[in-house]
Image (cartoon, rainbow, N blue to C red; front, side, top):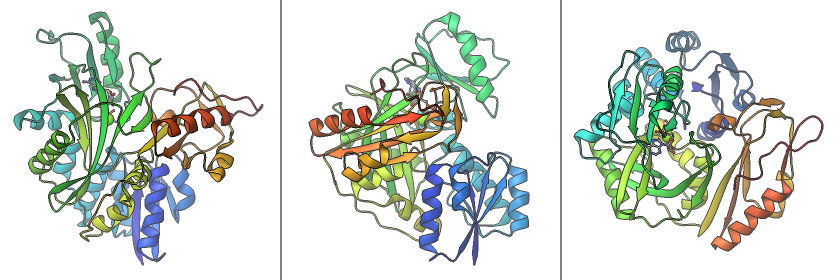
Length: 407
Ligand SMILES: Nc1ncnc2c1ncn2[C@@H]1O[C@H](COP(=O)(O)OP(=O)(O)O)[C@@H](O)[C@H]1O
Ligand SMILES: [Mg+2]
């Protein structure tokens, strides 16, 4: 029986584990690694080891002891590097090697390579803690971000010079390697573009617009994914950029997620990675394109050459994430009933109850997400409004702590 170590225990990894069990016809042992034992995937695994997925040497030691056959992750950037490292050390197959992971996840290397190869991206510099330079050639607003974090952790919009120091301090706090990027803020619509690269050729799965929480003025908290994106964009241009990325990074068979900001005919790539998006994007991809990307992913990491044929399934869809006011999340109300009646297509939970909610700034603060689909803008808006009025996130006293004013 094969032994597979899965890194990180979020909701999307639960789907990965289920798909692995299907692939191996249940003849597989899953060992989950996460720094927290309060994650959903613990219940899906055969064995749980509580170590940080970032602690490469501890993960390597555990992997050796367990004599694993594969180490995998899905939908997250940071564990990819541990996956590549441990695979290399133990001579296990891995669809990315360490240098490829670095060039695909560390924004410093990623942006240098984008500039060198004519892929449009916001003007930037990278700095470390000793930096005391001046930003002569930049105009505010700016964005500061750790080169190697994700989920918008430590990413801040800086509107004026006096805010820079505080924002940098925050970014350095989240930077693993100690480097931080300062780049120009680009206004426009943010698109999240999912592809599957098949034998070196990009195939478009879906393009959604990422809506941010407006009340969080200086941080970028994604609250909804809209399909179709409510902005005119040139699909050919986006495919060209994606193909250029696949060519330059020599991507052969892999999911590819590209985030970009579009304003009229200006396209700027924020970042990309050789994986599918998080926050149940694997599900959204399947609902919108008909491609079971998690299944494709598992086949690909197992060395097969899956073939994808995306076909449009719905005209409209909105995935909405549920954030809360500070409080204790104890239970959800209304979600099951809405799903049974077809008012929402599906929903996902991201936190195990009971759980203390302190803020609503980053993707790890999400409690749940729900998807509405339909065949007109009107239909999905109506369903969204109805769902928003019917659901609640309850604390121990039965108070609703959900923020209903975000959509
Ligand atoms: N140059 C920029 N201009 C405008 N918004 C930006 C810029 N860079 C980042 N953002 C916003 O911050 C979010 C997080 O930045 P990103 O580069 O994707 O880092 P992360 O790895 O944390 O996802 C983006 O989704 C986007 O909304
Ligand atoms: Mg991002």
